[in-house]
Image (spheres, helix red, strand yellow):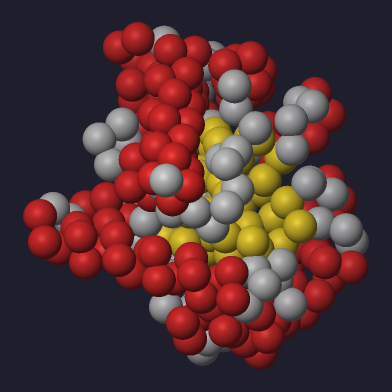
Length: 251
């Protein structure tokens, strides 16, 4: 049981707002600094091939100016590999990417794409970058991640977040079972996508999940109460859920 659950704050959509009008405001690097002060354990940024939000300059400035670990979300392409090797972020999370999608729609097919992914994982690992694969909580995908040599997996929580009632319970069970498989395979387990104040608790309570990455919801809530407030509230909900889970298992 890991009692301290890390929070990675994704700042992509601060850049989305900036890019809607152009110019320099609001600045994602300022958001990253505020996240650090509010209790974030890391900063996540997705440099998409179409540069729809985070830019190359953002990655350069984050690498140079932010002391928290930087998690670079990236597609498995030659361009993104070169950028990751140039900046050497703390972590690189390989994600699926479609130009027409509004947001990442599902997990990476590590099982079907092993041959394509192997060189990217190998080169990133050799560069000292902590590699994670953003995958569904499917034993085949988890086993493929293990074979590829990625030390970390991030379970896609989108279907859980979008479901309700019995469907949500079924999706939560999938995540719990996936996290257990990851532990058995020796993989560090993270989770993220679509998490909010209302649904984060059960995921935070999964004992072998050590990090949650949350962005869009926090930036949206920041409009109404400030980024500092939204992060602190999420941090408190995560800590409460983990503490309660720890207590119930110790009793």
